[in-house]
Image 1 (tube, rainbow over the protein chains, first blue to last red):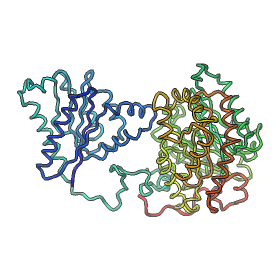
Image 2 (cartoon, chains in turn purple, blue):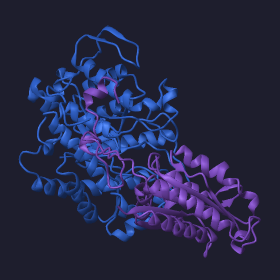
Image 3 (cartoon, rainbow over the protein chains, first blue to last red):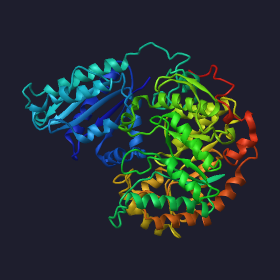
Image 4 (cartoon, chains in turn yellow, blue):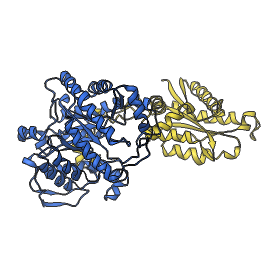
Amino acid sequence: MTKKLVVISGGLSQPSSTRLLADRIAGAVTREVTARGEALDVEVIELRPLARDIADHLVSGMPPARLRDALASVSSADGLVAVTPVFSASYAGLFKSFVDLLDPDSLTGKPVIIAATAGTPRHSLVLDHALRPLFTYLRAVVVPTGVFAATEDFGGAGRDGADGLDRRVARAAAELAELLVRTSGAVRGFNAPPVDEVGQVDRLDEDSVVPFEQLLRGEQ
Amino acid sequence: MHFGVFSVSDITPDPTTGRTPTEAERIQALVTIARKTEEVGLDVFAVGEHHNPPFFSSSPTTLLGYIAAQTERIILSTATTLITTNDPVKIAEDYAMLQHLAGGRVDLMMGRGNTGPVYPWFGQDIRYGIPLAVENYHLLRRLWREEVVDWEGKFRTPLQGFTSTPRPLDGIPPFVWHGSIRSPEIAEQAAYYGDGFLHNNIFWTMDHTARMVHLYRRRFEHYGHGSADQAIVGLGGQVFMRKNSQGAIREFRPYFDVAPVYGHGPSLEQYMRDTPLTVGSPQQVIERTLSFADAVGDYQRQMFLIDHAGLPLKTVLEQLDILGEEVVPVLRKEFEARRPAHVPSDPPTHATLLAAGPDHPNAKIGPERVSVGGAR
């Protein structure tokens, strides 16, 4: 069955080195997944065109349609690649705002590659000090290899040699592909609650309702 | 069908003048609005309950009791009464008292309240919002329906041999609505007892509101209170009207743009597209409101929010004139024309509950048919 990879690119400039890195990772994941005999659909979500919608959702509590579609795409993905520029020693504010608007359960168990771009390699620990705890909090499965690209990596002048970035991308992609093609073998039970179009429990479906007698007894 | 207005009781500066009304002015203004609601021929006036600035309505039964003395016909209601942080014993006492003073012209709407600190200020915890709403409301039902109550629960001091006074007028507890924007547990609660369900229909898209209402309708039928289309449904909505739509938009935009709830966010046009907010001519308000019944089915009560975001009293009274003269008469006619005969037009009132007697769900503590199978 075709798997779905969603790539979140939080770059703000146009063209964006964050998007450049996102595309390299997406390409590598596609190669690794197809090499394992599965097909992969890739959807890239650029946050820049959603910036105003993200702000509107934050202040009004309700997502505009285009943003709602983007959030639903993330929820329904089999795997994620999350790429942000580093601003002031952490992920970009816009990137975090988008993540803040995700349903807190929407990333549970989802394999994720974390990646970041910056002007200097001195920011590289942002991956493990900021991005990894964020996605761990959301119960995503973050692959061991994070991908950090400083400007110099695009020129091949990185201290781990001309192909250093490529090797990191390939290793992360292989780790994600392993998780993407692995099937649990479990079958949804007969009494499992109904799920909505993005694979989450649909709480407004009649069959998910906790009967009131149960609520009255203090069982939730 | 009932038509009315509900107020959140906010004290907000008028963005066109920069002037903030005093509490005294806003409180008297709301009394004037309530009297006008009756005068223009609407059916219901409801006020919210809040315990933090910029809202003034911390004591709804005092306000509604005063309005009861100055009106003769309108039903006095709430939007909402906090079932989580109020002591259900005090709700039972206060609203039974109001019911006597108002000659039965009272119903009320339960809500949980979403302001975190209000819970600890009243000795509660917002994380238990749903369990509080469930336990407190069940106790409230018993207090109004059993002469002597022995009770013990998780959230309140036990009661032994307690009688809530005054007893409900004529032994008929006020009809209760439950309001919730997105909690299926509250739709389920309303359905279980055969109470009304009201969606505020202001902050969310119509398709979401429709899903909440349909969940309530199906569970209402499940509990044996009637068919799904006979469930008692209310909707909110917000409107601003002028003779022509461009005039309405021009006048309302400065209020919308800085409104406390959605201001500094989406544009007025986008918000009108995504939510039921209607700013335009009376005809546009009529058409939009009629379309609500396509989404949620034929319903029994439509409430309008018209006095918020710093709008001056004079403007609010003009809105009520337009509602009473041009909008509601047409809505009444059109809604009745499309309503099947077996679907009730009005929600229960004191008079109809008195006539219905002890077999009506409102007379009972819970339904006879309890949930079996099907659900988790």
